Amino acid sequence: MASKRNEHSNEFRETIIKHILNGDSEREIAVKMLCSRNTVHSVIIKYKKTKCIANILGRGRKRATTTRVAKAIQRKIKINRRKSASSVKHEIEKELKVTISNQTVRRRAHEVGLYGRVARKKALRK
Image 1 (cartoon, rainbow, N blue to C red):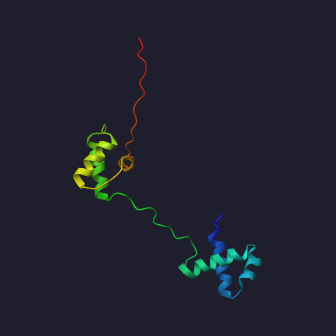
Image 2: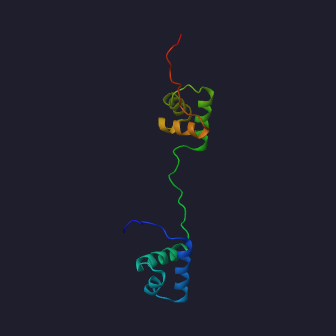
């Protein structure tokens, strides 16, 4: 199946469904709506499967950490902000017996608003 190039508005989809419920054929609807029959067919299939015209939002990727682990990471970072992600990672892995990556620790720090920035050293002026 080919990938989508653009999405149609909900109003457009609603009118297609109204035409189908009135008993019009896919070809007739395609001519009236100035679109391809495949477009009409895909809107109809989606409506029959979900009984919904709008796009259903997905859940996305599951988080690598639970809320308990995330709060523990954030707590460790707030205690000593100068600690590296790898040292916090090792402490959390020992305490909670979970495996996480350094990048996960950085992401949880960013969620709290902590970013690893160091001021640039300037030359000494006299």
